[in-house]
Image 1 (spheres, one colour):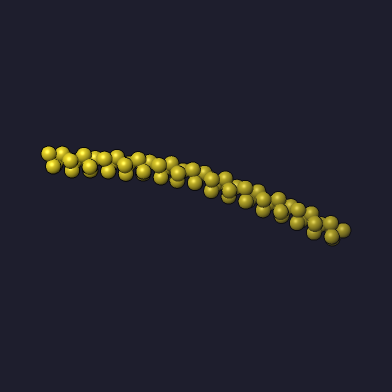
Image 2 (cartoon, helix red, strand yellow):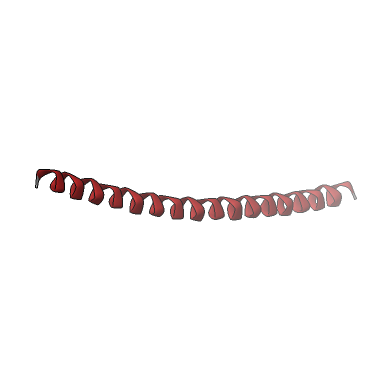
Length: 62
C-alpha cells in the first residue's frame, strides 16, 4: 500500500510539472512574439525619426 501512495504522489507531481512546463512554453512563445513585434515597432519609429530629422536638416540647409 505504501508503494502505491508513493507511486500516486510521483505521478501527481509529474503531471503538475508537465502542466507547468507546457504553460511556460506557451508563455515563452507569447514573449518571443511580443519581442519581435516590439523590435519591428522600434525599427519603424527609428526610421520615422530619421526621416523627420533629415527633413529638418534639409529645411535648415535651404
